[in-house]
Every structure is written in structure tokens, then in C-alpha cells.
Length: 360
Figure (tube, helix red, strand yellow):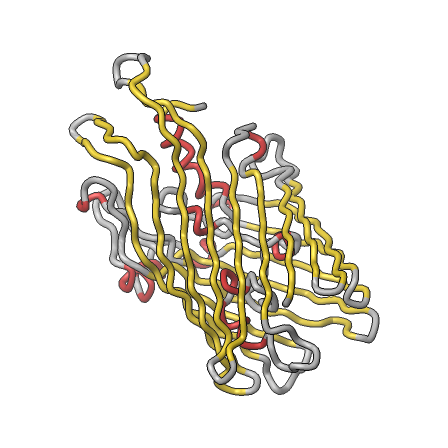
């Protein structure tokens, strides 16, 4: 259990530890930036150009367009579940993150999908500003529900779009802090856009891009203090170094940039930040994070993965290695990943993700 101050500190700290985000405190509902999928987690948090499972709804919705090509081989539907105890180094047993996604091909329409992201912050205690006396208890959580659609516009080019509803429930009871009074409850909506391209000059190469969480600011009590969504640009590629009957080795690379701009007074609107202001504030290149990964498959049965995540020291300095593996049997799949950070007491170190999937 934690006091309300501790809860607020956690909400501010999540961006520091959420993969793919560098701009601490610049946005809200930062659980949207926690990357799902133990498979992608094992490859250094990369997946925008290797979006060939149901997790593509998050990584790049355009990847759904290529998941039902041959009715004799491919399955129309797939579902996946993931669970992770978040920030394990803090020993917060009631803080966890869950993700579930599914996709299904509709004849003459395209691929549709549905996903849900959920984070539980656990139980908090509300105390007075000048007194440790307990005034109440509450549970805090956030959830996002995403609907997805993708189709091929050409044989080697797919596009996808997500429509997302976001609900944040930090404090369900009315709390007074200084001159502010109200409940810590808010909701919003967002759009994700994605494209995936398989260039004709190389059968082994895929290029992917997505922009996620395009939407209005989120206000809890006072709209003048509304915070932006974590609008994120993700670019990357995947290249099959080896592709034979029994062995496949793939290299993946992703780079991310948060498209948000704010100062101590003003917060730019989403389109201004996307198109201009987030690109003109400081050394832009240092604000990109980088993810590198390798995935090896023996037939379609056993997978081994490793990767590396890097962030410039001036933008947060997160660096860690990832490892993982996977098993496939018939229509079932199991994946796991592990984060190793050489820095002592790194909050993400020893994070383990587990995913289960089924095709139908």
C-alpha cells in the first residue's frame, strides 16, 4: 500500500521506465507506451516492421494486412494474452500490466482486430496535507480499448488504422490538494496509423512506420492544466539474414520519438507538436531511442531472441539487454522475455513477460 503522494510519484516515474519513451513528465496515460508482447520484448523492444502476429495492433496495425495470404496455410483468426509484474525492483506486488489482442479476417473486407491494455497501480491511502491521519483508500488503474482495421492497397503495401478509447482512474474519490478539488478520473480517444512495405528489390526486407496516440489532451480537474497524450513515432525495418527450410534468422531495428512539446506554461496541440514544435526543440536526433534485435527460428517450432535498447544519456540514458524464446505447437504459441540491465537497481531489470497465443 502507498500514500497518495507515492501514487503520484509512480505516475510520474512510469515514463522514466516505460520502454520507447524519453520525455519524462511531458505526457499522461503513459501506460500506453508500455510495449506488449513477450516476443517483441525479447528483441530489444522492436517490432514495427516484423508485425506478423496479433500484437501488430499495437506495434503497427498495417502488419495485420499480411497475416492471411494463403487460405491453405494461414489461419483467419489469432488471439494473444500477456501478463507482466511491472517495475519488479520496487517490489510492488499489486502493480501489474496486462494486454490482450485478437484479429480476424473478414472476406472482401480485410483484417479487423481488437485489443485491450490494462495497468493496475494497486491500493493507495489518502492522507491530509499536514496530518498522517488516513482519510480514505482507493484503487487506481487505467485501461485502453482499441479497434483495428487493415488491408492491402498493393500486394506489397499494407495500411492500418486503430481507434482507441482511453479511461484513466487514478483517484475515484474526490480529493482536495491545495486549491484543487476533484476526482482523478479522465477519458479520451486516440487514433493510430501504420504502414508496412515489402520492397520489390528485396524479398527479405520489410519497412514499417506508425504514429500512435494521436488525440486531444487529457484533463482530470482543470482543463487549463490538461496534459497531452504520448503521441509516438515509430520507424524501423526487418531483414531476414537467413531464410531456409529449417532455419530463419531475422534482424530488426526500431527507432522511436515522442511527438509532444511543452514548457512550464504551455502545452502544444497534438498536430502542432507532431508536425513542427517537437522537431524544433533541442537536439532532435538525441531524442530518438533505438532498439536492435535478433530472432532465430528452428523450423516453426523453437525460437531464440536477443536485443538491445539504447537511449542517449542527455534524454534519460536507459540501456538494457533483452533475451527471450518461444515455442510453437500446432495452433498454440508461448513466448517469454527477460530484461537485463547492468546498472544496479535498474527498475526494469529482471522484468519477465509471458505471452500465450492461439490461432483459429
